[in-house]
Length: 338
Ligand code: EPU
Image 1 (cartoon, rainbow, N blue to C red):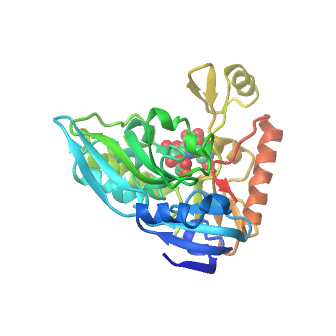
Image 2 (cartoon, rainbow, N blue to C red):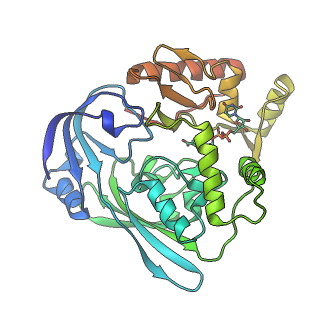
């Protein structure tokens, strides 16, 4: 394990922001993570754990230790007549795991195709898309407790998953480094094709009884058409979460803005697409300096090349304020701002 000094983090964040970390280390095994925690006393240091860097906005040089998680490998560890259990190390690219499951015709991850980032970051915010979230197939994970270096297991219930939420963003934030995640996938299953865009894509291809691969291909096509590829245009996916508001407030807004979409949730709440609110406020495709909201998906902020983290942050705050002034709704970032 080598600790480097003054390393640019540009290759390690999908926004492509060029800031430096005063120390940088890559860990490749669980044992290295444990040594870093104990012998290097990570708990006492300012630290930034980097997965794929796909949910991160860096606004300044990082005066601490950046830890790149590079643990690799994925295996079937158990199976019975109905299920397989797949354990993936945290540094594996998320999409590789999805392809591994799709190619083996195991059900459960196909709707989550092409999400950027790595396996270890997926549970942090319970990644989700097209009607699926990882909590639906998540069995357990192992994480190293930074303070003690001990390996600790978290079950699905213990992770306290919610919409883009988990215990790792809340009660135990910065206390653990996730090293592996196990998923329980079905050998015979039902595909989740309720999402309108998936149905339309399958229909356009004339597919009536889709396979797992057909659904995965449809999701890949939808994402590729709408979401910018971070390798071409820096971004971190949805910048904000979709807000959840009271049904009564939604009805009042609907009277004023008749086209406002809303998806009913339990507990008398309605989820409103932040992309619609941002588009309504005129930001879709609008560029200010080196940043702006993407032309095909207003929820995604992009770096046109040389944007600084602060420039993107200022844009995000302008959008947040305008949405608040227009609708009275506060949209909160889902991206980690450092
Ligand atoms: N919409 C607009 N204008 C826009 C974007 C969206 O009007 O520019 C409205 C439309 O009414 C559309 C609705 O928003 O029908 C939903 O849009 P979309 O299907 O693109 O989904 P989203 O709510 O904007 C969420 C996730 C995405 C995920 C998609 C598909 C969040 C914060 N984002 O976006 O996740 O891929 O659903 O399931 O929940 C991510 O988290 O990085 C991400 C890309």
